[in-house]
Image: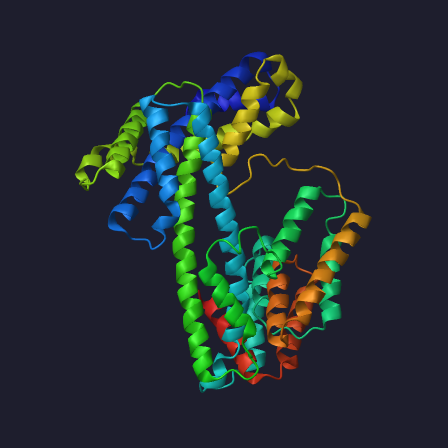
Length: 461
């Protein structure tokens, strides 16, 4: 990494020579974003081309329109033919469409996981098994949970275990834990609370995004079939049928999600490039551009291009992203400091608009591919009354949901929600007590055996 970048970041961190450092900083970060977006889009676009060429995905029809926009983007951004403002509108529209579809896919995934949980717990009705020693098993689980000294890892292990153990608490106890979990957010910002509530609603299958009636109706049919099933009287034939359908649905969900992730990655990169002002091109960015232009031509050609056509450019781009990534991480360390601590100095340099664009680019190139660009985080602190109201609303929704489900499905929902909640134990003894009580209270031997088997698998990974 160039010493100039380290020195630049250090000066901004200490508020030193900001009038000179801030413009250089913003220009440097923009250039790194530009390089990264060019190279990453070229590599991802090549992967997309290979999938389309080989017809390796059954959901290619879902992205036909997007592919045309990507080809237009190459023409506008790298061949200088077309209007950037119009392209930005197209990129934003297609990002939003993909995001809406992904929202639907995520909702279906969460709902199907609820029923997969239920089916997993009836599996041992139809197979022979030898009951495991519960005391030995409980001790093994405790050892697994606390094997690391890192509290973050321990808490994640606890939540993972709770999400698989038989749920034998009353609804009243469950709702109280849920309400208590929200009180932990007292005084925090509203955005954090909204994110947490969203997680709880998706996990519990309460969340029904716009487009569920429009997109991927094949999953809607399966969900309705699973909803109508009688899990208490389920036959072996029904169990095998539903298990196979869920496995097929999981494969399809993974396939289409994988495709959307790839397409969104390219869209985001092209969006960043379209936002950038004219930049100096390094050797690597020239190779990336060359590759993107070749790929555009290959997409539009009736004949398949041999991989050798792209080979030189691909070789030139090997390992470049890793170096760029380190530089970007270093530069980004003070990006939000420029917004929070040096806002007056940024405005004084006439760099406010540039700063806003770079913050947008940071979102586009982050690991959160489907992040909202226009949505501003609310820093407004929430009150106890606000949390109380939100808790009552959520509990009311869950009560209504529970009324329409069997006990097996409701337990699955409770397990999914408990898995998302902050850990509510005060000591390792309380954790052990919960594990033992969960197993002791479960009179369904097949459900208990299934839960223990699943946890054994998790612990052995």
